Image 1 (tube, one colour):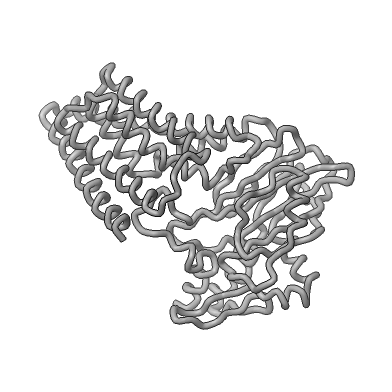
Image 2 (cartoon, rainbow, N blue to C red; image 1 turned 180 degrees about the vertical axis):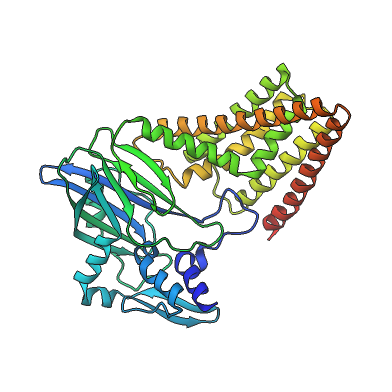
Length: 411
């Protein structure tokens, strides 16, 4: 049990624990940035990574062998809630070459199926993730010029900036990068997103890969790669967000396979597109109660949609547009975890993410209507009963969400 606690603490720490009921606004997304640049001297890779990702081998050994995590670089102090882990700057200074070698080995680079050499040109240890991430060569150099922390940072909150010189046979060709250390266990609600920028081209090409890079990611290639990745992220968000799924199911069951469904879906799409873009760009208040209030309101919209569909009163296009406005807030903050506002591909990424949401939305509607048609064909008497039972279940679940998220708002 101690080892499990150590592993979880390493990536999350106390500040990373997500609050219950805040599905869209969890602070659990940890971002690793990779920027590849090119100049007359060759190709350089800038990597900004959460510190635990650079110690996957030690964490894996601790889990497998039941040994303490404490090393020369990582040490712990006891607190009222258990051990708290820190990174020792003195240990890094004492063996800078050894620490640099660890950073070099964290990622494996290749080109055309052949390994590419990577040598550390410099690194910085930071106490927490900076607000902005570099997007080109000048910003990389500026980031590396900023001094690191002078106090031992918390292991679970620290990030490491590193600059690597890559040895490539084709400096302008596609590069593959993959994690070389074992993946680390993550707390529920914590995820890793990799924001990758190819600054060798103008404008820089930006895309995002979820996970710990257990599977190689390709840097370079056609421009459509960025758009395709954000389309995928949009699809994943709506199909993995159960409240969004329930809302769309209610819209489909409420309007049925009729022309009015087109107007209902269009209203919802316009509503969430407006707030998705506006809120992502910063048009949202920073009041402490705003996030839980929006989450509670989203749950209430699902309850409303279930009740309206149950009564066959899904006839207010204006109300559905307002529902879309609320759901767009949730979409925007999820997008904020994987795309920065200063991204050079901001507009294409925003459009692609929104397209992905629409694809997922249409897929849910198609499956719902197909299931309803099949049930009607099998039994015209049972189909309405099952339809109403599904809507009643959604109403009950969303009512519970209102209570749960409302409690977070009142806390």
